[in-house]
Amino acid sequence: MKIESWLFIGLVPFFALTATVYGFMTGWGEHVGYLGMYLVAGLSGMIGFYLLFTARRVGLRPEDRLDAEIHEGSGEQGHFSPWSWWPIVLSAAAATGFLGLAVGWWIVYISVGFSAVAIVGWVYEYSRGLHAH
Image (cartoon, rainbow, N blue to C red; front, side, top):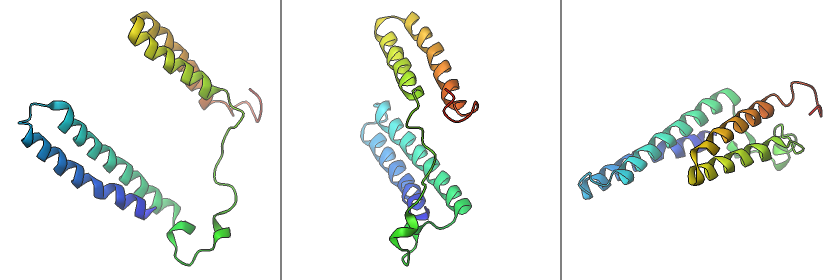
């Protein structure tokens, strides 16, 4: 993960320099461009810091070693929920929220409630036991 972290951290000066040059070329009048690039630089730095922190905690993966074998990367990669319905509920609530931005603000308030229910349901899905939806 150290390669990925340094790749993201290395993008921070690039985006910061690009944003500064863009700001000078537009006379700092076009706020979306340079501000967006500064935000991308910050986001890239946060991702790089997280990956560097995780690399120190986890250690070397088979992808990070030159002498690794293919079979070392096999096995369980994480915990996934292929039978979970909560992502669909959350995406429907987000779609309702975007619809509310176009149609009327009162729909946004309804979608916030649905989003809260979906997030709580998704987070506490396994608190009742396996397959106990």
